[in-house]
Amino acid sequence: MSRKIYRVLAVAALLFASVGVAEAQLNSTANSVALSMTVGESITISTTPANVTFTYSPAGAGTATASGPITVVTTANVLAGHQWIQGFAWLGSTTAALSGPSSIPASEVFAVINSNPTPMPCTSNGWKSPDFGVAGAFCGGSLFETDNPPAGAFTNTSVLTLSLNNLGAVAPGTYTGVLNIEAEVL
Amino acid sequence: MKIKYLIALYIFLAFASGIFAQTMSPAVAEYGKKANGSFKLQNNTLQPVAVVIEPFSFSVDKDGQHFRKLDATVHLDLSQTSARLGPKEIHEFSYKVKCDVLPCTFSLLTGMIIGHTQDGLAVRVILPHVVYICEKQKDCRAGVLRAAGL
Image (cartoon, one colour):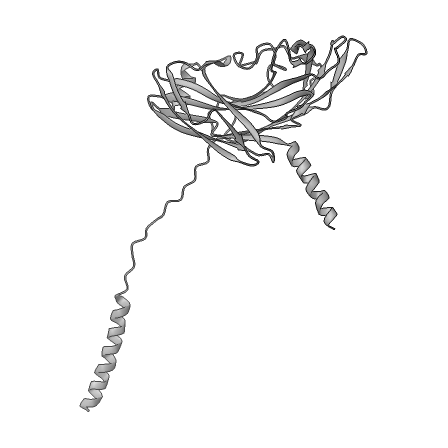
């Protein structure tokens, strides 16, 4: 009889011991790991193609047609509260937009921005930024302007078509120059 | 079969190299008093490109941004004033700046000639990194623009 009691007690002791072990499990307090990512404001400008060649024709007042239009795509990712996003195009010089055996001034370089039907000489100042670039060599006041852009992604596509007019007789040779294209966020 | 792949690769490279895109980040930065900052310029093309950085002070009003030579009161220490970015490279330019007069505003214009040509017009792309420095960083840009009536 006492043996039976001992057995029962032993089994009970084992059961309680296992329960004790189970209760002895400790869980740590939940720690949190902060995840963060900072995405800075950015602006991207792409131009296609990145140069223009001209084919000269002495016919009429002397003209030269460009190899093709330049497509300028500006993309930005900005916070709210900016004044504007703008794009500009201007030549490297007013008196020698293209230089070679002689100089072709900016007044003989004409631009059509997007579908504006009238080519305008590249002799203006930047519309809202008259103190940078080359004064009097801007092709249109600006390629584009978007005031108070909303937060998030922004895209503008402008097409710039250049031509040379009123060239007269141009001395043979190679003519080169630089067309500056800027995009800015303020 | 191999020729097909080569043709596809050639078309891809021709197309990719015809799109000349560069990215500036951040486009705008605000600091309080002493500024240790940086910006990243990404050459998204498959061709290397040379970069030249020019600092300009500017003021702003309703007619726009008015650039001028960097003020003598702006002490700018730029890590590099030029660099060569490889294909797809992201290059970080760092700077330290202290302004004797606050607020001070300047722009780092990064210029890249991306379409060199022997004949005609080459395209030079310019992306600015605009910096605003005030007594306190918070709302520095907004304060400058507000003071300018914008």
